[in-house]
Image (cartoon, rainbow, N blue to C red; front, side, top):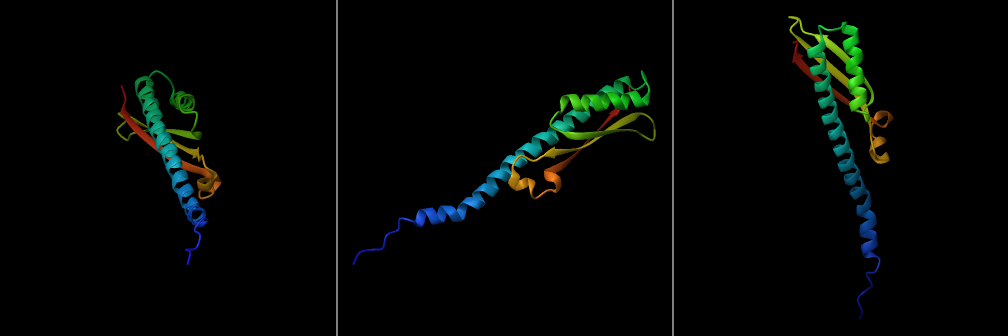
Amino acid sequence: MRPKSEKGQAMVEFALLLPILLLILSGIINFGWIFGNQLLANNVSREAARYTAIHYYDSLTDDDRLIAEEIVAERAPTLVSPVVTLVKSATGDSITVNVVCSVNLLTPLMSAMFPDGKYSVVAQCSMRLE
């Protein structure tokens, strides 16, 4: 008696595991993309806070916010429509720069799980006024 052929077994197992592997792979890709953009948002908020802390008394407060927005937009082009706000501390000796923005997800599989295919990124940095 001959054993039955197992020619299609590998193809069936691969077809069963492929969706799981694609989900894991797209999760890894998007996690790295989001993590990198979170680091980028942290760094540009720090740069904008440093510039604002040094030049706060040189110009008007509204000019500082516009310059902080330019710094963020210029140095972080992958952030979608960043909103930059400046908050002076109650004691008046420090300034906080808040950056709220979105990041477009890279894979369609993960984009379907988030509203508009975007992930929200928030960064904040405080510096003492000089």
